[in-house]
Amino acid sequence: MTKPSPVDGSERALPDYVLVTPARDEKARMPALLAAVEAQDHLPCLWLVVDDGSTDGSLRWLALAAADRPWMYVIPFPESPTEYLGGHVARVKAHGAEQALTLAARRGLSPRYAAVLDADMIPAPDYYSTILTRMEASPTLGVASGLVTSPGQDRRIEVEAFQRRDLPRGPIQVFRVACLTDIGGLPPYAGYDGIANVKAGLRGWERRLYTDLVAEQARATATRYGSFAGFRR
Image (cartoon, rainbow, N blue to C red; front, side, top):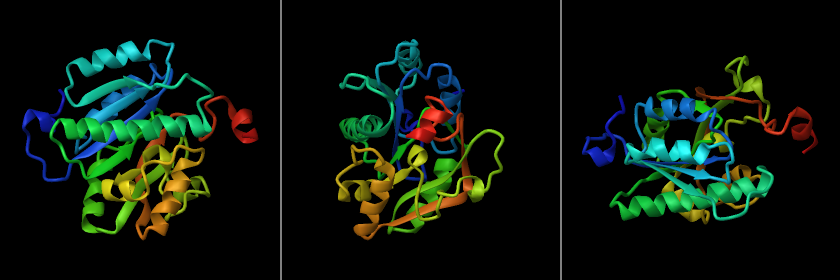
């Protein structure tokens, strides 16, 4: 059963947040992703999926899923599809974040947080409730995330050496909207997540990666087009 969302009139102790998911040809993963979002202790007030020219039936599947979920929206990305890496996917996410906040405002909502959730990620059920609780308790915390693991890996920060405690991970970043506004929105460039972390720090915002919160990735980092292509890139 779908949990009540803000538009159903339910009471929510934690602040509202919007969730943005970029997707291209991820139909096979969408049922698990939808289940993971609906399993969250704290649902988003609005979940926007940006379809980037899928050809596997993703758009139709998403539209059907959104039909009976008033908190879920699906929009196409206006640019022509290119290789789904680097600057292009950054622009998809930047567009999605901007549109999600605009849609929320049109619905009379005032989310204080905006989160990115890649289509190949499965966050733990307490992921957003825990992060938002911690961000609410620390007004200078502008960007946060949990730890990214791949199937079969130990859930330790040593899994990937670049998962530093001051560098929240792009596939599951959560931004305070005030921080996101302060840095001019998500940077539409390759390496957007690292750039966002740096810009937030320069503006005086704290950044935090929590090692006790986990989101499992369906495939290892940078292997969408194969391990060799990811290594070469």
